[in-house]
Image 1 (cartoon, rainbow, N blue to C red):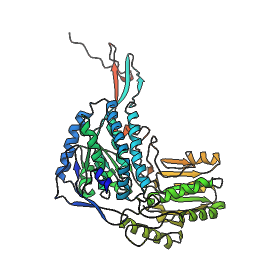
Image 2: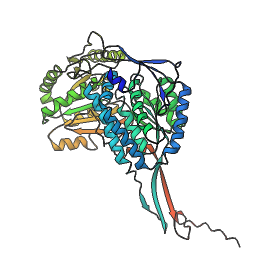
Image 3: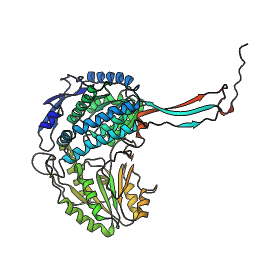
Image 4: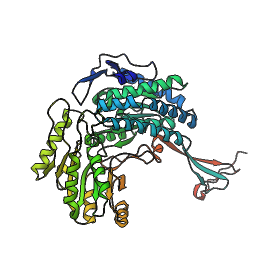
Length: 509
Protein backbone atom coordinates (compact mmCIF):
# COMPACT_ATOMS: atom_id res chain seq x y z
CA UNK A 1 0.00 0.00 0.00
CA UNK A 2 1.10 3.54 -0.72
CA UNK A 3 1.18 4.63 2.93
CA UNK A 4 3.70 1.89 3.70
CA UNK A 5 6.06 3.34 1.11
CA UNK A 6 5.63 6.85 2.51
CA UNK A 7 6.67 5.53 5.93
CA UNK A 8 9.72 3.69 4.58
CA UNK A 9 8.33 0.22 5.25
CA UNK A 10 9.85 -2.41 2.98
CA UNK A 11 9.01 -6.08 2.47
CA UNK A 12 11.90 -6.83 4.83
CA UNK A 13 13.20 -4.39 7.43
CA UNK A 14 16.04 -4.22 9.93
CA UNK A 15 15.35 -4.15 13.64
CA UNK A 16 17.78 -1.68 15.18
CA UNK A 17 18.56 1.95 14.51
CA UNK A 18 20.77 4.57 16.11
CA UNK A 19 19.66 7.54 14.11
CA UNK A 20 19.97 8.50 10.43
CA UNK A 21 21.88 5.98 8.27
CA UNK A 22 22.56 3.87 11.36
CA UNK A 23 20.41 0.80 10.78
CA UNK A 24 21.60 -2.65 11.74
CA UNK A 25 22.26 -5.21 9.03
CA UNK A 26 21.77 -8.31 11.17
CA UNK A 27 19.76 -11.08 9.50
CA UNK A 28 20.56 -14.11 11.66
CA UNK A 29 18.89 -13.17 14.97
CA UNK A 30 15.43 -14.31 13.93
CA UNK A 31 12.62 -12.64 12.05
CA UNK A 32 9.26 -11.20 13.11
CA UNK A 33 6.37 -11.37 10.66
CA UNK A 34 3.88 -8.55 11.09
CA UNK A 35 0.44 -10.05 10.48
CA UNK A 36 -2.64 -8.01 9.62
CA UNK A 37 -5.16 -8.95 12.35
CA UNK A 38 -8.09 -8.11 10.07
CA UNK A 39 -7.30 -10.79 7.47
CA UNK A 40 -4.35 -12.86 8.72
CA UNK A 41 -2.13 -11.75 5.83
CA UNK A 42 1.53 -10.83 6.05
CA UNK A 43 2.18 -7.08 5.95
CA UNK A 44 5.96 -7.12 6.18
CA UNK A 45 8.84 -8.75 8.05
CA UNK A 46 11.47 -7.43 10.44
CA UNK A 47 14.89 -8.87 11.19
CA UNK A 48 15.32 -8.83 14.95
CA UNK A 49 18.30 -7.05 16.37
CA UNK A 50 21.09 -9.06 17.92
CA UNK A 51 22.67 -8.54 21.33
CA UNK A 52 25.61 -6.97 19.50
CA UNK A 53 23.22 -4.54 17.80
CA UNK A 54 21.74 -3.73 21.19
CA UNK A 55 25.19 -3.04 22.63
CA UNK A 56 25.94 -0.69 19.73
CA UNK A 57 22.69 1.17 20.33
CA UNK A 58 23.46 1.59 24.04
CA UNK A 59 26.99 2.80 23.32
CA UNK A 60 25.69 5.32 20.79
CA UNK A 61 22.92 6.48 23.13
CA UNK A 62 25.43 7.08 25.92
CA UNK A 63 27.62 9.11 23.58
CA UNK A 64 24.61 11.10 22.39
CA UNK A 65 23.54 11.73 25.98
CA UNK A 66 26.89 13.30 26.85
CA UNK A 67 26.27 15.90 24.15
CA UNK A 68 22.50 16.27 24.45
CA UNK A 69 22.52 17.05 28.18
CA UNK A 70 24.64 20.12 27.47
CA UNK A 71 22.03 21.57 25.11
CA UNK A 72 19.79 24.21 26.76
CA UNK A 73 16.33 22.86 27.49
CA UNK A 74 14.49 25.37 25.24
CA UNK A 75 16.69 24.25 22.35
CA UNK A 76 15.83 20.65 23.14
CA UNK A 77 12.20 21.71 23.01
CA UNK A 78 12.72 23.12 19.50
CA UNK A 79 13.73 19.68 18.24
CA UNK A 80 10.57 18.19 19.74
CA UNK A 81 8.59 20.96 18.03
CA UNK A 82 10.12 19.91 14.70
CA UNK A 83 9.18 16.30 15.39
CA UNK A 84 5.62 17.34 16.14
CA UNK A 85 5.46 19.17 12.81
CA UNK A 86 6.83 16.10 11.02
CA UNK A 87 4.16 13.97 12.64
CA UNK A 88 1.53 16.39 11.35
CA UNK A 89 2.83 15.68 7.84
CA UNK A 90 2.75 11.93 8.42
CA UNK A 91 -0.48 11.77 10.42
CA UNK A 92 -2.57 10.09 7.74
CA UNK A 93 -0.12 7.35 6.68
CA UNK A 94 1.03 6.64 10.24
CA UNK A 95 -2.57 6.51 11.46
CA UNK A 96 -3.32 4.03 8.67
CA UNK A 97 -0.37 1.85 9.67
CA UNK A 98 -1.51 1.82 13.30
CA UNK A 99 -4.97 0.75 12.13
CA UNK A 100 -3.63 -1.95 9.84
CA UNK A 101 -1.00 -3.45 12.14
CA UNK A 102 -2.79 -3.14 15.49
CA UNK A 103 -6.40 -3.39 14.35
CA UNK A 104 -7.97 -0.24 15.81
CA UNK A 105 -10.16 1.72 13.42
CA UNK A 106 -8.68 4.43 11.23
CA UNK A 107 -10.17 7.27 13.31
CA UNK A 108 -8.52 5.85 16.43
CA UNK A 109 -5.24 5.34 14.56
CA UNK A 110 -5.28 8.99 13.48
CA UNK A 111 -6.26 9.95 17.01
CA UNK A 112 -3.26 8.14 18.42
CA UNK A 113 -0.93 10.08 16.12
CA UNK A 114 -2.71 13.26 17.21
CA UNK A 115 -1.78 12.32 20.79
CA UNK A 116 1.84 12.28 19.68
CA UNK A 117 1.45 15.74 18.17
CA UNK A 118 -0.27 17.02 21.31
CA UNK A 119 2.40 15.70 23.67
CA UNK A 120 5.05 17.26 21.41
CA UNK A 121 3.31 20.63 21.83
CA UNK A 122 3.08 20.04 25.58
CA UNK A 123 6.76 19.11 25.80
CA UNK A 124 7.81 22.25 23.94
CA UNK A 125 6.14 24.38 26.60
CA UNK A 126 7.48 22.17 29.39
CA UNK A 127 11.03 22.70 28.14
CA UNK A 128 10.84 26.25 29.51
CA UNK A 129 9.30 25.18 32.81
CA UNK A 130 11.74 22.71 34.36
CA UNK A 131 11.45 24.64 37.57
CA UNK A 132 13.30 24.17 40.84
CA UNK A 133 12.64 25.89 44.17
CA UNK A 134 14.48 28.54 46.17
CA UNK A 135 14.37 28.04 49.96
CA UNK A 136 15.38 30.04 52.99
CA UNK A 137 18.35 28.64 54.83
CA UNK A 138 18.54 28.34 58.62
CA UNK A 139 22.07 29.73 58.35
CA UNK A 140 22.72 33.46 58.03
CA UNK A 141 23.96 34.64 54.63
CA UNK A 142 23.25 31.31 52.96
CA UNK A 143 20.95 30.45 50.11
CA UNK A 144 19.33 27.12 49.28
CA UNK A 145 17.73 25.97 46.08
CA UNK A 146 16.97 22.77 44.20
CA UNK A 147 17.48 22.02 40.55
CA UNK A 148 16.86 19.18 38.14
CA UNK A 149 19.42 17.53 35.89
CA UNK A 150 19.16 15.01 33.03
CA UNK A 151 19.07 11.41 34.14
CA UNK A 152 20.58 9.48 31.22
CA UNK A 153 19.04 6.88 28.92
CA UNK A 154 15.31 6.24 29.16
CA UNK A 155 14.33 2.72 28.16
CA UNK A 156 10.79 2.44 26.77
CA UNK A 157 9.06 -0.93 26.43
CA UNK A 158 5.65 -0.33 24.87
CA UNK A 159 2.60 -2.50 24.23
CA UNK A 160 0.74 -3.33 21.04
CA UNK A 161 -2.47 -1.47 21.86
CA UNK A 162 -0.93 1.99 21.62
CA UNK A 163 2.03 1.22 19.40
CA UNK A 164 3.21 4.82 18.86
CA UNK A 165 1.60 7.23 21.36
CA UNK A 166 3.04 5.72 24.54
CA UNK A 167 6.55 5.98 23.09
CA UNK A 168 6.02 9.69 22.46
CA UNK A 169 4.65 10.27 25.96
CA UNK A 170 7.99 9.11 27.30
CA UNK A 171 10.45 10.04 24.55
CA UNK A 172 9.37 13.66 24.07
CA UNK A 173 9.37 14.44 27.78
CA UNK A 174 12.66 12.59 28.20
CA UNK A 175 14.14 14.59 25.30
CA UNK A 176 13.34 18.01 26.72
CA UNK A 177 14.77 16.82 30.05
CA UNK A 178 18.10 16.10 28.32
CA UNK A 179 17.83 12.32 28.07
CA UNK A 180 18.18 9.92 25.19
CA UNK A 181 15.66 7.12 24.56
CA UNK A 182 15.99 3.47 23.55
CA UNK A 183 12.69 1.98 22.43
CA UNK A 184 11.67 -1.67 22.34
CA UNK A 185 8.23 -1.78 20.75
CA UNK A 186 5.86 -4.72 20.94
CA UNK A 187 6.71 -7.65 18.68
CA UNK A 188 3.06 -7.54 17.56
CA UNK A 189 3.50 -4.04 16.07
CA UNK A 190 7.14 -3.72 14.98
CA UNK A 191 6.36 -1.79 11.78
CA UNK A 192 4.91 1.10 13.78
CA UNK A 193 8.25 1.35 15.59
CA UNK A 194 10.18 1.38 12.31
CA UNK A 195 7.90 4.03 10.82
CA UNK A 196 8.31 6.34 13.83
CA UNK A 197 12.07 5.81 13.86
CA UNK A 198 12.18 6.76 10.16
CA UNK A 199 10.32 9.99 10.95
CA UNK A 200 12.73 10.72 13.82
CA UNK A 201 15.72 9.99 11.59
CA UNK A 202 14.38 12.36 8.96
CA UNK A 203 14.19 15.21 11.48
CA UNK A 204 17.53 14.36 13.12
CA UNK A 205 19.25 14.33 9.72
CA UNK A 206 18.18 17.94 9.12
CA UNK A 207 19.18 19.18 12.57
CA UNK A 208 22.73 19.27 13.93
CA UNK A 209 21.86 17.28 17.04
CA UNK A 210 22.94 13.93 18.52
CA UNK A 211 21.07 10.73 17.70
CA UNK A 212 18.86 10.80 20.78
CA UNK A 213 16.15 8.36 19.59
CA UNK A 214 17.06 4.71 19.07
CA UNK A 215 15.14 1.54 18.22
CA UNK A 216 15.69 -2.11 19.18
CA UNK A 217 13.22 -4.69 17.90
CA UNK A 218 13.49 -8.16 19.38
CA UNK A 219 11.89 -10.66 21.70
CA UNK A 220 11.08 -9.80 25.28
CA UNK A 221 13.08 -12.79 26.50
CA UNK A 222 16.27 -11.50 24.85
CA UNK A 223 16.24 -7.78 24.07
CA UNK A 224 13.62 -6.92 26.70
CA UNK A 225 15.46 -8.79 29.44
CA UNK A 226 18.78 -7.29 28.39
CA UNK A 227 17.30 -3.80 28.57
CA UNK A 228 15.75 -4.11 32.02
CA UNK A 229 18.98 -5.61 33.39
CA UNK A 230 21.17 -2.91 31.82
CA UNK A 231 22.82 -0.66 34.43
CA UNK A 232 23.39 1.91 31.68
CA UNK A 233 19.64 2.60 31.67
CA UNK A 234 18.61 4.37 34.91
CA UNK A 235 14.91 4.61 33.99
CA UNK A 236 12.66 2.00 32.36
CA UNK A 237 9.13 2.87 31.32
CA UNK A 238 7.14 -0.33 30.86
CA UNK A 239 3.61 -0.73 29.55
CA UNK A 240 2.11 -4.20 29.70
CA UNK A 241 0.58 -6.86 31.92
CA UNK A 242 0.65 -6.74 35.69
CA UNK A 243 2.56 -10.01 35.90
CA UNK A 244 5.28 -8.77 33.57
CA UNK A 245 5.30 -5.45 35.40
CA UNK A 246 6.11 -7.24 38.65
CA UNK A 247 9.09 -8.84 36.96
CA UNK A 248 10.31 -5.58 35.44
CA UNK A 249 9.95 -3.76 38.75
CA UNK A 250 11.90 -6.42 40.63
CA UNK A 251 14.75 -6.61 38.13
CA UNK A 252 15.17 -2.86 37.75
CA UNK A 253 14.88 -2.12 41.48
CA UNK A 254 17.51 -4.75 42.29
CA UNK A 255 20.02 -2.67 40.34
CA UNK A 256 18.61 0.52 41.94
CA UNK A 257 17.08 1.75 38.72
CA UNK A 258 13.78 3.57 38.39
CA UNK A 259 10.58 2.40 36.73
CA UNK A 260 7.43 3.94 35.36
CA UNK A 261 4.84 1.16 35.21
CA UNK A 262 1.59 1.38 33.25
CA UNK A 263 -0.06 -1.98 33.87
CA UNK A 264 -3.54 -3.43 33.97
CA UNK A 265 -6.83 -1.61 34.36
CA UNK A 266 -10.25 -2.90 35.42
CA UNK A 267 -12.11 0.31 34.86
CA UNK A 268 -15.60 0.94 36.13
CA UNK A 269 -18.40 3.42 35.55
CA UNK A 270 -21.00 4.09 38.23
CA UNK A 271 -24.34 5.21 36.79
CA UNK A 272 -26.55 6.99 39.32
CA UNK A 273 -30.29 7.41 38.72
CA UNK A 274 -30.02 11.13 37.97
CA UNK A 275 -27.51 10.57 35.16
CA UNK A 276 -28.04 12.02 31.68
CA UNK A 277 -28.55 8.91 29.55
CA UNK A 278 -27.68 10.82 26.39
CA UNK A 279 -24.17 10.98 27.83
CA UNK A 280 -24.09 7.59 29.53
CA UNK A 281 -24.78 5.26 26.61
CA UNK A 282 -22.20 6.56 24.11
CA UNK A 283 -19.58 6.85 26.87
CA UNK A 284 -20.04 3.23 27.88
CA UNK A 285 -20.15 1.92 24.31
CA UNK A 286 -17.03 3.84 23.23
CA UNK A 287 -15.22 2.88 26.42
CA UNK A 288 -16.03 -0.81 26.12
CA UNK A 289 -16.03 -1.32 22.34
CA UNK A 290 -13.39 1.18 21.17
CA UNK A 291 -10.12 -0.50 20.15
CA UNK A 292 -12.09 -3.74 20.59
CA UNK A 293 -11.70 -3.41 24.34
CA UNK A 294 -7.91 -3.45 24.10
CA UNK A 295 -7.15 -0.27 25.98
CA UNK A 296 -5.82 -0.21 29.51
CA UNK A 297 -8.56 2.39 30.08
CA UNK A 298 -11.35 0.34 28.45
CA UNK A 299 -14.59 0.19 30.41
CA UNK A 300 -14.89 -3.31 31.90
CA UNK A 301 -17.59 -2.90 34.56
CA UNK A 302 -20.71 -0.77 34.87
CA UNK A 303 -22.39 -0.42 38.27
CA UNK A 304 -26.00 0.64 37.72
CA UNK A 305 -28.45 1.87 40.34
CA UNK A 306 -31.31 -0.62 40.72
CA UNK A 307 -34.10 1.69 39.58
CA UNK A 308 -32.55 2.32 36.15
CA UNK A 309 -30.83 -1.04 35.59
CA UNK A 310 -33.34 -2.53 33.14
CA UNK A 311 -33.70 0.64 31.06
CA UNK A 312 -29.94 1.16 30.75
CA UNK A 313 -29.37 -2.52 29.99
CA UNK A 314 -31.87 -2.38 27.12
CA UNK A 315 -30.40 0.89 25.80
CA UNK A 316 -26.92 -0.62 25.79
CA UNK A 317 -28.09 -3.75 23.97
CA UNK A 318 -29.75 -1.57 21.35
CA UNK A 319 -26.56 0.48 20.95
CA UNK A 320 -24.40 -2.64 20.63
CA UNK A 321 -26.60 -3.83 17.76
CA UNK A 322 -25.46 -0.75 15.83
CA UNK A 323 -21.71 -1.44 16.13
CA UNK A 324 -20.28 -2.19 12.70
CA UNK A 325 -17.50 -4.77 12.89
CA UNK A 326 -14.96 -5.13 10.08
CA UNK A 327 -11.89 -3.80 8.32
CA UNK A 328 -10.40 -1.07 10.53
CA UNK A 329 -9.45 0.96 7.44
CA UNK A 330 -13.11 1.12 6.36
CA UNK A 331 -14.55 4.45 7.54
CA UNK A 332 -17.87 2.76 8.37
CA UNK A 333 -16.26 0.36 10.84
CA UNK A 334 -16.65 1.05 14.57
CA UNK A 335 -14.82 -2.02 15.89
CA UNK A 336 -11.92 -3.85 14.32
CA UNK A 337 -10.35 -7.20 15.20
CA UNK A 338 -8.48 -8.39 18.24
CA UNK A 339 -4.73 -8.33 17.84
CA UNK A 340 -4.15 -12.09 17.47
CA UNK A 341 -5.61 -15.57 17.99
CA UNK A 342 -4.47 -15.68 21.61
CA UNK A 343 -6.62 -12.64 22.31
CA UNK A 344 -9.59 -14.39 20.70
CA UNK A 345 -9.02 -17.42 22.91
CA UNK A 346 -8.82 -15.18 26.00
CA UNK A 347 -12.14 -13.63 24.96
CA UNK A 348 -13.85 -17.01 24.63
CA UNK A 349 -12.37 -18.37 27.86
CA UNK A 350 -13.50 -15.32 29.83
CA UNK A 351 -17.07 -15.67 28.60
CA UNK A 352 -17.10 -19.35 29.53
CA UNK A 353 -15.77 -18.63 33.00
CA UNK A 354 -18.38 -15.91 33.53
CA UNK A 355 -21.29 -18.05 32.35
CA UNK A 356 -20.08 -21.03 34.39
CA UNK A 357 -20.37 -18.79 37.46
CA UNK A 358 -23.93 -17.83 36.57
CA UNK A 359 -23.40 -14.84 34.30
CA UNK A 360 -25.90 -14.30 31.51
CA UNK A 361 -24.76 -13.17 28.08
CA UNK A 362 -27.08 -10.29 27.24
CA UNK A 363 -25.47 -9.54 23.89
CA UNK A 364 -22.68 -10.98 21.73
CA UNK A 365 -20.39 -13.57 23.20
CA UNK A 366 -19.38 -15.15 19.89
CA UNK A 367 -16.41 -15.25 17.57
CA UNK A 368 -16.91 -14.43 13.91
CA UNK A 369 -16.01 -17.06 11.33
CA UNK A 370 -13.71 -16.16 8.46
CA UNK A 371 -10.35 -14.46 8.12
CA UNK A 372 -9.24 -12.10 10.86
CA UNK A 373 -9.51 -12.10 14.63
CA UNK A 374 -13.07 -10.81 14.90
CA UNK A 375 -15.45 -11.22 17.84
CA UNK A 376 -18.78 -9.68 18.78
CA UNK A 377 -18.81 -7.02 21.50
CA UNK A 378 -20.30 -8.65 24.57
CA UNK A 379 -22.46 -7.66 27.53
CA UNK A 380 -22.74 -10.00 30.53
CA UNK A 381 -24.72 -9.70 33.76
CA UNK A 382 -22.31 -10.49 36.57
CA UNK A 383 -21.28 -10.14 40.20
CA UNK A 384 -18.33 -7.98 41.12
CA UNK A 385 -16.77 -10.64 43.36
CA UNK A 386 -16.31 -13.25 40.62
CA UNK A 387 -12.67 -13.99 39.83
CA UNK A 388 -13.14 -13.32 36.11
CA UNK A 389 -14.67 -9.92 36.87
CA UNK A 390 -11.73 -9.14 39.16
CA UNK A 391 -9.32 -9.77 36.26
CA UNK A 392 -8.60 -7.65 33.21
CA UNK A 393 -9.54 -9.35 29.95
CA UNK A 394 -8.17 -7.46 26.96
CA UNK A 395 -11.31 -7.85 24.86
CA UNK A 396 -14.72 -6.14 24.36
CA UNK A 397 -16.47 -7.73 27.35
CA UNK A 398 -18.63 -5.51 29.56
CA UNK A 399 -20.01 -6.67 32.91
CA UNK A 400 -23.24 -5.10 34.19
CA UNK A 401 -23.71 -5.07 37.97
CA UNK A 402 -26.66 -3.55 39.89
CA UNK A 403 -26.30 -1.63 43.15
CA UNK A 404 -28.72 -0.23 45.74
CA UNK A 405 -26.81 2.63 47.37
CA UNK A 406 -23.76 4.68 46.50
CA UNK A 407 -21.61 3.44 49.37
CA UNK A 408 -22.05 -0.12 48.11
CA UNK A 409 -21.23 1.01 44.58
CA UNK A 410 -18.01 2.74 45.65
CA UNK A 411 -17.01 -0.30 47.69
CA UNK A 412 -17.53 -2.61 44.69
CA UNK A 413 -15.89 -0.09 42.38
CA UNK A 414 -12.72 -0.12 44.48
CA UNK A 415 -12.81 -3.83 45.28
CA UNK A 416 -10.54 -4.94 42.43
CA UNK A 417 -6.74 -5.21 42.35
CA UNK A 418 -6.35 -2.54 39.67
CA UNK A 419 -6.73 1.22 40.00
CA UNK A 420 -6.32 3.03 36.69
CA UNK A 421 -9.44 4.84 35.42
CA UNK A 422 -12.93 5.41 36.76
CA UNK A 423 -16.03 7.46 36.11
CA UNK A 424 -19.39 8.35 37.55
CA UNK A 425 -22.42 9.70 35.76
CA UNK A 426 -24.69 11.81 37.93
CA UNK A 427 -26.34 15.22 38.10
CA UNK A 428 -26.15 15.16 41.91
CA UNK A 429 -23.21 17.35 42.94
CA UNK A 430 -22.95 15.80 46.41
CA UNK A 431 -22.62 12.31 44.98
CA UNK A 432 -20.16 13.52 42.36
CA UNK A 433 -17.97 15.16 44.98
CA UNK A 434 -18.14 12.05 47.16
CA UNK A 435 -16.89 9.95 44.25
CA UNK A 436 -13.95 12.33 43.77
CA UNK A 437 -13.14 12.59 47.48
CA UNK A 438 -10.76 10.54 49.60
CA UNK A 439 -13.58 8.10 50.34
CA UNK A 440 -14.49 7.74 46.66
CA UNK A 441 -12.63 6.31 43.69
CA UNK A 442 -9.18 4.89 44.47
CA UNK A 443 -8.00 5.21 40.86
CA UNK A 444 -5.36 7.46 39.34
CA UNK A 445 -8.04 8.87 37.02
CA UNK A 446 -11.55 9.73 38.21
CA UNK A 447 -14.08 11.43 35.94
CA UNK A 448 -17.58 12.85 36.22
CA UNK A 449 -19.96 12.63 33.26
CA UNK A 450 -17.24 11.45 30.92
CA UNK A 451 -16.09 7.87 30.39
CA UNK A 452 -13.02 5.97 31.49
CA UNK A 453 -11.32 5.74 28.15
CA UNK A 454 -8.80 8.16 26.75
CA UNK A 455 -5.92 10.21 28.14
CA UNK A 456 -6.06 13.98 27.88
CA UNK A 457 -2.69 15.58 27.32
CA UNK A 458 -1.74 17.85 30.19
CA UNK A 459 -2.94 15.60 32.96
CA UNK A 460 -0.55 12.99 34.29
CA UNK A 461 -1.57 9.52 33.13
CA UNK A 462 -1.32 6.48 35.39
CA UNK A 463 -2.94 4.49 38.15
CA UNK A 464 -2.65 2.96 41.59
CA UNK A 465 -2.46 -0.53 43.13
CA UNK A 466 -1.62 -3.19 40.53
CA UNK A 467 -1.74 -0.59 37.77
CA UNK A 468 1.79 0.26 38.83
CA UNK A 469 1.70 3.75 40.28
CA UNK A 470 3.68 5.52 37.57
CA UNK A 471 2.74 8.73 35.80
CA UNK A 472 3.41 9.73 32.22
CA UNK A 473 2.68 12.52 29.81
CA UNK A 474 1.49 15.59 31.73
CA UNK A 475 1.54 17.69 34.89
CA UNK A 476 4.87 17.27 36.74
CA UNK A 477 5.62 13.80 35.34
CA UNK A 478 8.78 15.34 33.83
CA UNK A 479 10.40 15.00 37.25
CA UNK A 480 10.54 11.22 36.82
CA UNK A 481 12.94 11.70 33.90
CA UNK A 482 15.40 13.86 35.87
CA UNK A 483 17.50 13.74 39.01
CA UNK A 484 16.92 16.22 41.81
CA UNK A 485 19.79 18.15 43.37
CA UNK A 486 19.68 20.39 46.45
CA UNK A 487 22.24 23.20 46.58
CA UNK A 488 23.40 25.37 49.47
CA UNK A 489 25.55 28.45 48.86
CA UNK A 490 27.44 30.19 51.64
CA UNK A 491 28.17 33.79 50.76
CA UNK A 492 29.27 34.81 54.28
CA UNK A 493 32.71 34.90 55.94
CA UNK A 494 31.71 32.28 58.47
CA UNK A 495 30.96 28.54 58.48
CA UNK A 496 27.96 27.95 60.74
CA UNK A 497 27.28 24.26 61.31
CA UNK A 498 23.91 22.57 61.34
CA UNK A 499 21.80 22.64 64.53
CA UNK A 500 24.26 25.11 66.11
CA UNK A 501 26.96 22.46 66.51
CA UNK A 502 30.39 23.81 67.51
CA UNK A 503 33.42 22.04 66.14
CA UNK A 504 36.37 24.08 67.27
CA UNK A 505 39.79 23.67 65.69
CA UNK A 506 42.90 25.69 66.37
CA UNK A 507 44.21 27.71 63.49
CA UNK A 508 47.72 27.10 62.21
CA UNK A 509 50.19 29.50 63.87
